[in-house]
Amino acid sequence: MKPLFTLKDVSIDYGTSPVLKNVSLNFDKGKVTSIIGPSGAGKSTLLRTLNRMNDHIPCFRLRGEVFFDDENIYNNGTKVPLLRQNVGMVFQKPCIFPKSIYDNVLFGVRHLCSGRKYEFPRIVEEMLKAVSLWEEVKDKLNRSALELSQGQQQRLSIARALAVEPRVLLMDEPTSSLDPTSTSAIEELVGRLSGNLTIVIVTHKLDQAKKIADDVVFICEGKLIEHGMSENVFSNPYQQQTKDYLRWHLCKC
Amino acid sequence: MWALSRWRPGRAFFASSFFISISVTGIIFIFLIMESFPIFQHEGLGFLSGSEWYPGEVYGALPMIYGTGVVTFIAVSFALPLALGSAIITSEVLSGRVRLVIKMMMELLAGIPGVVYGLLGISLLTTAVKNTFNLIDGNSFFTAGILLSIMILPTVMTLSEDALRSVPKEYRDQALALGLKRSETILYAVLPGAIKGIAGAVLLGIGRAMGETISVMLVIGSLDRIPRPFYNIFTTGQTITSKLGREGAEALGVGYHWNALAGLGLILFLTVMGITFIGNSIVGPLAGRGINNKMKQKKR
Image (cartoon, rainbow over all chains, first blue to last red; front, side):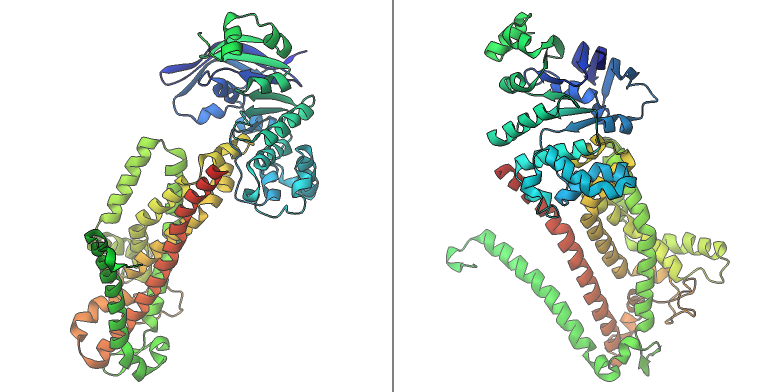
């Protein structure tokens, strides 16, 4: 199977300090890939490279090539908004606009495909059902989304990202600010969404990666240490650094 | 609350400052009401609706009220798009260092005394307006409005910029990540979050425009009349402040003339107080609410 994303020799720095060093990597279509590593390893930077969200950071510089569907997304002619429509993103902290639940789900759709106005109620219902939020909020769609709990807000963010029908969903530690119940709700959701959707998820919780990921990428201090199927990486890693990290949560790279 | 048993010098200092400033405002208000009372007795509501002003005979404030309204309207219509545009560029496009320089320059502009603007106005703006629109006299509502728009521009711009900056960065990231263009992100994610702060900035700008005296006095021509047709803004006119500035000293204590000027002062005082109050109550709680929201989220 042809990979969806291909990174070739990607190095990134913000001014002076290198964040990623010569990373070459593939992300497969329809799979859940989890990026693990200690904090400061460059996990988020790697993730945000895939939808060019790093562009807005001052002094950001990338060398190497990143292909999405055989197209180098760091070429000059790339339409970045279109790329981001295809590659959705969910952030660490749920970002909810001070609007109603209904308007929050539609935030992207409304501005990207305004011609589909008559479909809006259907989209809202479908997306909220997809993230298992519909039953909880169906009677208060016009209430402010800020009234929702943190976990519900994160699921709402996912619904909003799904509403623009992306092919890939990037998740940057989506459960780090959530309680255990909401966390398992999101983990279950990721399981359900995979298949149709390619998911790349950054996490520092190893049990979470073990539970939901098909593939695991381990990076440390900007270097790619190991990339393989989840069961292989967790049960029988090739690299000594991976072994150390899995056992002691430490890495010397 | 003001428990004197727990006497502390610091608290006494703040309490007395508080009471002094409150009572000064109160005294001004009472003074204006007392001084203007005779003219309302003499002219009745005709003082507000009359358009003739001949000292010793009749006092109608409408031309001045009209002038203040029109000049302020022109000032805001020109200043708002410019201020908002430059606030958006400064806050959303420019880098941190350039932004600071621009803000500093804007704050310097806000500090230039009105009379300097007035001198520039009579030497440059009146002739420019006169030549451009082929007028007999360059002193007009329009000239005063343009001059005021330049004067309130820094206030409106810096406060709007603050409002835009106070919109959380997450909103921008979220909108961009959904595939919105930069311009759409500003329009749909940033501006709605800043709209209250911008409204407050505009109201404070209006307050400043209405109260500005000397520069307006120098370029408006000072004729107490409502133009015909009323929308002809290229004629000379009068605002409340320019009227007070010109006639205040000579009318002091001269019966109804003085009372009428105090009446104009009262109208201006109430309007500007009202607008500034609304402006502050929009800008103030907004900043506070942002913090409250963050605290609420932390608690969760």
